[in-house]
Image (tube, rainbow, N blue to C red; front, side, top):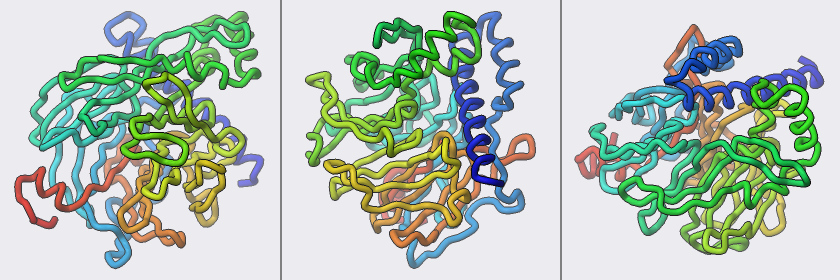
Length: 406
């Protein structure tokens, strides 16, 4: 496929996925109303009701590569998009344990975050659930939680809430899909909020604002085109800093806004942006995190260019100090979603979401572990939002067998 054709295809994919994501959000809000079936029909027409993936090789599944000498040991935790089960796998792909989810949610952001002891926070938009290793539910909170959840040093829970809102920027007042940074207490009660449109309204590109205003005027708010345009931020990451770094301080919050090509740090006390980077460098990014050396690791989707990359960036200067690109570049591509986790041995665990693939890559670009989702639906491999690898001793503590190595 020529480069121009790939770019057009990538753009169409982004538009379709954006429409689908917005429709899924509306579906969750309308699931018990007469509009629900109409929204489901729209999703079926777009082909995103099951979130199946572009196929690599249907005959391959599970762990297809494991270089034990160079891969970082641990237990791999993941769930397929809109799945009712979180799976714990050893390095050979054998399932060690599973946690059942009562509600797989309407979104594509199924993930699990350790909370303390043998408890976990399960996020599946629009719900956040606290449950234990044996799938017993402690509480459920349905506030439009989406994409990410983090726990700070004091045990407070941080997440993103999605809701209707109005954007006031450059003379425009537009109805949008808005996002709020929220802190929850141990009971799941929202105790603090920061509407992110208050901080990031001026970062929305003038051309997008003008186009949204024109479509709203000529086609109306209910049109598919406006539905996609109204998701002007699409925040997808929350990380609470546990230490000072060059551009931020302990307790600040790292965010990522896909539609702004932006990663940013917010001071929740001052309710202000203290650092940001990305426009002109990133292309619809996901899942940034700060490394022990103070640099930033981020999944740069490359939805417009047609291939993804992993970047390590020196945040004070914006210099790229390391990157991973597929060989050739288009062999690694997730136009939406995607994640990257820094591993203890210096490798990176990469979730190529839309292909249902996870791989571990070394600093010199060698793939030393590779996993293909064995779950299929409609004849295609199911997507994975995010896989995380946890240390062996941590899993052993959860499983109640200290010292046992899977």
